[in-house]
Length: 342
Image 1 (cartoon, helix red, strand yellow):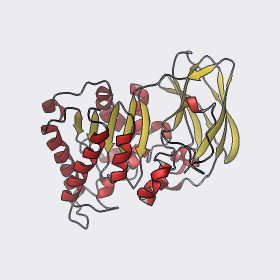
Image 2: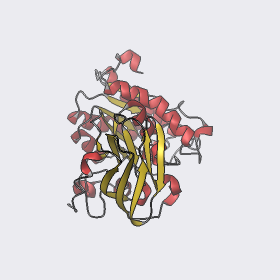
Image 3: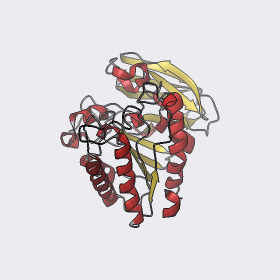
Image 4: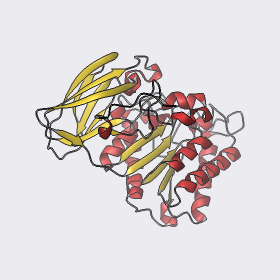
């Protein structure tokens, strides 16, 4: 499946998108040519450009972007799905401007030293495409490459329900640790599907994170044994493409209504969490020296959940604090001994 090529002058600045455009999907997060092999809900999420952004350096005072947006139907996330262009530099938001439906031009103040990386987050929920980029009052160049972080997960990774894409835990952790996030978080639909494992196996990465499981409790119910074996199979396939790449696996974080409630196959979220951790621990004991387990149960409190399921901005910040440093250490090749990694 091939669509119109993306704007060549924008492409060098683009980060977070590893696949070519498809008709109506400029920044897909799964290979459009393989989309028939994944569930429809996964492909629907993969058309939302979560984590896709621009990164640049330069002494320009402002940045002009020509763009189009495809929709203003933001669904459950509302404005938090992304309705603005936001420019961050030196760990702070320098400017933010609203996006309009259809074609438009936005001007963002740059500010800061020329050698400081600037990151422009897109209005993800409006399905944007950046068609041109211009510098005002100076020059800009694409930012140098950062270590590639390939992240698989569910709605939390996709950014639900942070108040803006820049405040999702993956974006926060990537800024803090200078990582090139490729966000393969699919809300409501990340269940460890084999085609997703095959996709991870085929993509280049300095570090891989896997943070799913909640959708295996109720949306597509799994038993604990089924989830254990699926985790084993998922990791086996990713390892076929990445035999030595550091891989960080976080078991599901708190979801109060699911913790002790059996699904139709008799598994609570606590049961699924335990099954995932046992699968990872067994692999580590068998000699996988590049695997890190992060138990998810104690990372969030109920107060961190905006709707009882998804984190608030403060909850996303806690996820970034808990998961970001181990992922960054793994990217730098600093995985610990098996005993210390639990």
